[in-house]
Figure 1: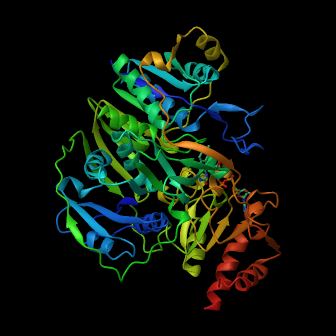
Figure 2: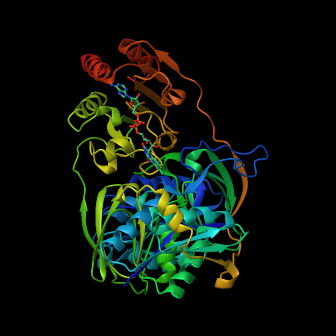
Figure 3: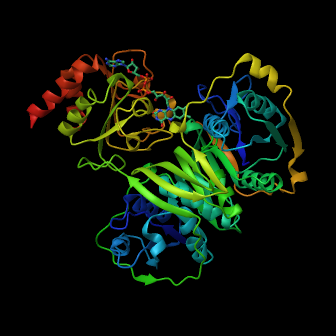
Length: 317
Length: 249
Ligand SMILES: Cc1cc2nc3c(=O)[nH]c(=O)nc-3n(C[C@H](O)[C@H](O)[C@H](O)COP(=O)(O)OP(=O)(O)OC[C@H]3O[C@@H](n4cnc5c(N)ncnc54)[C@H](O)[C@@H]3O)c2cc1C
């Protein structure tokens, strides 16, 4: 039987849906009991949210002022303090989990499996390498704890709402280092859908040419009720902030609809959208590699096609 | 003066479309261009800039793996690193073993700052820097897009899912480089000539006291599922009807 501990991602108020995807992944392991660990400060709502996820057996909470911000060096020893009770420790393959989980694995002296996309057995998984150009099967030693990050785009969110798992405070004695200090988080406030979880995403590339021109992408996104994304080139050029980047080094997403506008389709970008339902590409170059993966392609100048599409969509509603 | 250690991994060049070999035992590497992992090149550039700004005395590049990685270390020396260390082994290496190797060198060389790429573009693991920081019991500042040194501490801006996070960490520390940290310099021919005279030490992994004990094993390589070919539409009207047909509007 497998005993799985999932390290929850949250911002102090809200549980991140990446956590529910980790629960889905863990549920695919036969005969597993699933606990969620919430590292937080006193009085947070997050534990109750985690307790509502279907499939969760128990929520364990460590309350400590050090958990005001998720700093890996401070959180890893707390995870390790409980890890001994488990056969598996999972975290999401988001920047939170990518930062924290290898630190946990190293303290436990085991290899980490990054970006689990398929569960074959309790110790056998599939994961992508080379920006998704190859899929490998990996086997973890049966006599060691399995530490892994879960590629969230590969799993549906577990249901959240009806379940009520018990919430328990975990008392641990750990030394939390003081060599690392959180200074600030600069996040641009937006009332648009969240890129990582949106059902629809419209992304713009280098072809937009400026931050002002990028407005037409925002307008099209609003007409579709979509989140906004971007290629690396568009972020590098300063048209949009870094958190909008989609791809190998940005976000790996799986919306039902992805619209790529003025994006060439470099492998590093495509790896971020492999699991999208329908990919639409608008590009003036009919040879652009994006058309090799697009379900619907339109060869056109985006500065004409995008406003026209936005109008057509707005007039439908 | 501070010594900076930079990890350079030899990896398939990022412009190559990698294919799984016919036996499913690996990817095709015959005749394929190999380069420094792009994130590591950025790590080295940052170390060189710190040295040029007077914050470091020496920049050492290290690669762990096959002897061919000499080429990438020579490129690193041509970029401006002072010396290179090649740790050789024919055993398969996990990020954990590489982290242990780097730790052995950190201790031997009394390193104060390690900069590595946030991930390699072959294994895409994104683990080595974090693991080194854990084993060393020192701070980690991952996915760095900006780095400022201030005496014995570092202010690092990190690219995280929510935006940009700033951490203040004490030295010694480990930083992992993201793409927007800098743009690496081009190597000039005279630098390549000069690099040939710079020291490159070769040492066996076992001589550093690190055992490449096996952990997670890779048992199979397969190509990804390919997406089926889509349709081309002539105009925006065509696009709207295609979306409607798919039930997306
Ligand atoms: C290690 C590494 C990691 C990377 N990670 C990422 C990543 O995570 N995400 C990512 O996106 N990239 C990533 N890249 C960069 C990637 O290789 C490409 O350089 C990048 O995706 C290109 O962005 P783009 O498609 O916007 O620009 P370009 O490749 O320049 O494409 C612009 C496209 O716009 C089209 N166009 C121009 N004008 C118009 C017009 N008026 N109307 C319609 N179409 C027009 C052109 O035909 C062209 O196809 C990475 C690269 C490396 C080396």
